[in-house]
Length: 497
Image 1 (tube, helix red, strand yellow):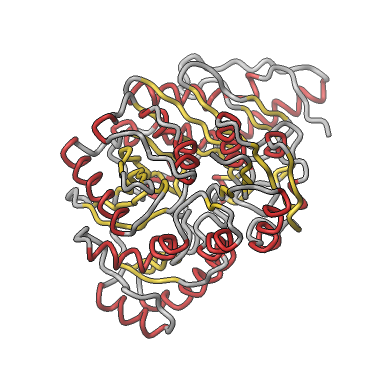
Image 2: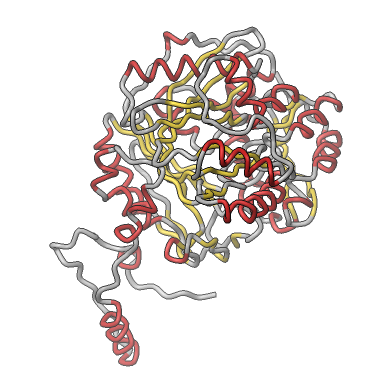
């Protein structure tokens, strides 16, 4: 087993990995950019090293600097987490060249599955259904136009490397194509250091379902069932759940078998996900492989009892998985809500700034993977995720109720967040029924936005109260479905800086 692991990431995922290291008796080593000098993840490291200025290209995407620090710290391995360099072939190869274990697939496997085009071609040979699209990354606009005409609009432009919705653009007619390609290339370059994009047919209103897979160096391969990931904004998941409400056991086993076939064909070792789109006729198509630990991995841990990060580390150290497929089962239901520093009422724009107050929910079946604290300045340079709220219960109905109760307990003041937006999603009849698709937010946006029917009256009342020097006693309408708000739960308060 490793003695020291460098965690080449930040925020909640760096903390999650550090905890797994501690439990395995491994010393976690951290890194930080200039603006992350006071980041919460540094408190969980044995030691930490400055890697560069605040922009990602100068710090968390700086391969040379990270490898240099790893050598200086004398680590045995590097865990990349998710995002940044997690799926970067050059980084994996630089680790191998420096005789440092990269906790993830080999550079060769990563080049295959990390490149969405190459992985599509491999999967096609393995007789797993794929979405029609390019069999090679496009370099000239003419090749994109030709493929779009062949498969028919709408199409989607996607980054060949990376994930998280970065670089994606839906194109509904030829006049939008060139600008969409250019925008996708710029975003892909910024997020992953690689501007390569490709094109495939866009499936309208699909379910996005991923299967968690693992394979070790001894040839053992398992899947740990599915996660329903169809609640998305800007092509990025924000709510995930398992089991998927739309899968029956037969389809679950078919998709799981296909996922294991994909990972074996790619000679992939370590943890990853095989992603599928499911159309309205419940036909599934291979989408891509995400060659890393996923943001939403905690819900799989909740229903299977398997620590995925520990398994990643053990597999990288050469240990066998030690779990047979027939030993695995889903117990209960789990949901994850990603808590972002963003303003849903302003096109989900990031909301950096200081967290003036923070109160996290607690209770049975509630887990928080958090990377923030009261008094911390959320920087504008990175993905605005603050934490992940996970709830587990014996069935889906109780799990949704527990999630809604937890969201209402969650208080973050000083910046805008999507907490209320998440609660409103789960209050909709469509979500309660479980038959939603990737266009859910777009189709229900008016219902998901808060109503301010009495805002003017409330502001006038507050102004009168303030001028008289009196405190307002706000009474919640007993018939209201909205319940109390964080402002009411806090009692008397004022913002001081």
